[in-house]
Amino acid sequence: MRPQPECPGDTDKVHLQRAAENGRVLCTSDADFLILTQEHAKHAGIIFGQKQGVSIGDWVRYIHHFHATKTAEEVVGMVFFVERH
Image (cartoon, rainbow, N blue to C red; front, side, top):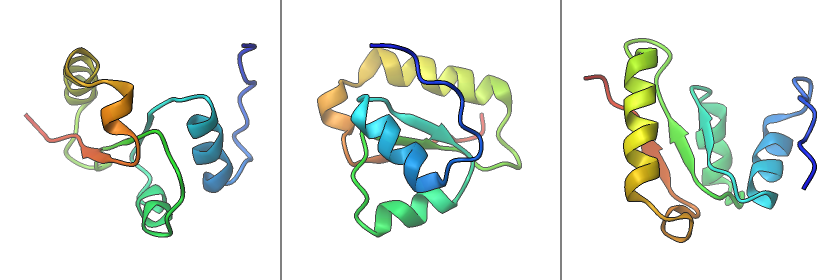
């Protein structure tokens, strides 16, 4: 599969759809993606962290643990929240 070029002008829905099509969990601090999940948008999983209070280190630790403990199948359609440590 060829890497997708960065598309910063695409809508959130397009980004979420592209991630789902590629079986990728989307990591974001944009709450609009949480709204999309309530509208029943299909996705391969979302990791969400607040813009305030969650450090880069928190993100790295969470994603590392997430990757080590979750399978692709068990995160489909789920939203996970990065917490401050």
